[in-house]
Length: 251
Length: 251
DNA sequence: AATAGCATTCCATTTAATGCAAGTCAATCC
DNA sequence: GGATTGACTTGCATTAAATGGAATGCTATT
Image 1 (cartoon, rainbow over the protein chains, first blue to last red):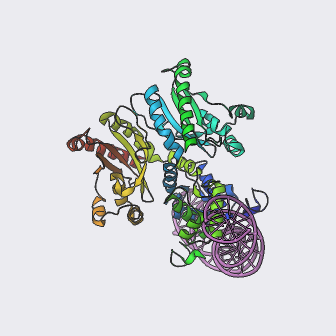
Image 2 (image 1 turned 45 degrees about the horizontal axis):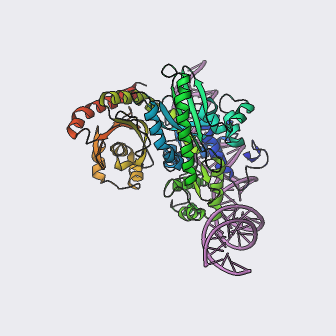
Image 3 (image 1 turned 90 degrees about the vertical axis):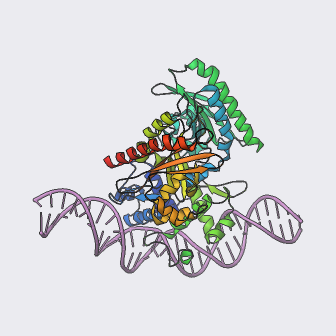
């Protein structure tokens, strides 16, 4: 049994089921590395026997959370994950709270504005209003990025506790702990992104002090320089983030 | 044991694991109904005992696919679903194939253009370029909708086989089988949506004849009437969908 | 203080998950 | 064309874990 494997001691946290843990571990492995992966590789990386990995993946495939390519027989994440994710996001009240401010920020600044969530060491920009005169594709550039490579991600990781720190550190370039600790109270952060973009983010903070989401604004340095960002973007972003935070407090 | 429950005969499909099936069933139940649900209700709806439902949900919660509200103790879908979904979408080649055509259609028509996927009886608009002069929030109106209430959904369900039909019929108002059968070869479909919007969709068809995605265009009838849609939108949309389909064939 | 409702844990039993071994299949090599 | 290899799938016996009844814990309400 794999229960005495990676987690040390028998099994995982008390009151949980090893089979579910194994199944989710395979989902996580599929989300890392190439899109399509061989059974033998997944079994090896998960420290499960071949038949066990096979049955777990078959079960997930029947449920739609995994897909098996009929030609190559390799496994990949499945499309039903999209439906579950969207059903989750459709009911996330913080995103409804953020939405009108995204419109307002986009109108007043003309730059790209986004709502960001932190999950498993990644930042996902789940809402986006493109700047400029043409609406751009919101999936490019990356809608999901390693958290610590983004301003929004650093702010949310800094406020997210130990687990968030560990997951973020394992996903891409880690940041010095002192630098992250310094961000735990920062109301906003500006980063420059290659080749010539800036990103400013501010967390939305709940009454309990947690940060469920961040608002970010991004633009080209060629178009608007740092002074403009500091004088125009930062104050507007802070007002919006504070207003959303107050909205969370009121109910 | 619940193995002899809803699935008839013992357990589910051969070579699959009941525990994984039960866990995914709870995820599906959480994606239906209210965002936050009581343990007792979930146990009843899933025909599992209270302790079993409890352990399954605890396992999913530890894994991040479910969350338990510390105050109300109710369960909801969890944020790690967003990361898994985005990692899936980030590698979906059909979306990369569609993306340039979305830009082109948006530029030439000035209307909202979208890329749609079908999953579990729902249509999810995973890419969107907003029409009009302001970029709008791409999450509103609904980014996920019952499949048969949308043009894109009807086209993809019609081409998706029996399972797609059944799942769609269970999710919102069913459509006459004859009407759906008639759409199996339709190159495009126009629907009017309350209160005054139109939506035109065309499927992207793979060499094997499957339809992994659809391109949709949506606008206001006040702004552009049916004649304009038929004369300007439909031909452009068909050309784009055919070009993407040819791109799938070429590799 | 008593009650109700809901969640969580203990424990014995039963069932299913597990992994070894064997089987299957397709691609490659000689 | 046959043998070999690599990868996936299935049969079966064993073992561990999943299961559910009963009990416990906790909070809100009366």
